[in-house]
Length: 249
Image (cartoon, rainbow, N blue to C red; front, side):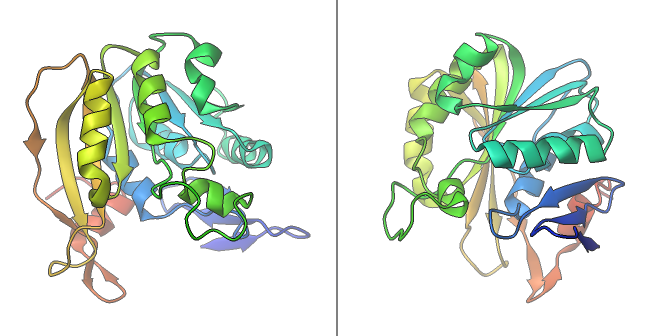
């Protein structure tokens, strides 16, 4: 269910789990990748979590709704996006568990301090540089392209922010997988778990979910593939369960 806010381009989207998120279609609305990442990430009781480049704040809100963690922070460089995400936090009465900070993720360790978090999550820009962009200042361009940060920036700051053996969860594109692994290992973020996501069973994957561990041992578990659609316009049963946070049968 979606409710448009009077006098604004914003709308309130029902997450179908008792929570809501405010979005502006002229900026950047969250997609299935954010939902899959929040489901893939594991957060334990008492752990502190930071979401880098939080955008609408969807990942901290979903993690607060679906895990036993008690301290979630979203960092967003675009001031108006951070303000909108903060309003979503208040709308859901999550102020005691979730906060949104406006700042540059390239300075995240300086903002929050080294070894401050048990878990870091990130749904980073997928595309390299500004190739094909007509207006690189647009919020959608910032969200999709490495204009304000690179994956190297994300991995470097994550390594500083995590406690020893802390966990980093990210979603990205498979075509950059070799580069992602090389960069993670450069900062002693050892890939431990990976799952490829396919739009259909007969299509190649278009997303990859990765868990890396700070100073972890070298051993990677590859999980079974995840399929989004059973047929055009119809989600698979597993995607329905993920959206509703239902346990596997």
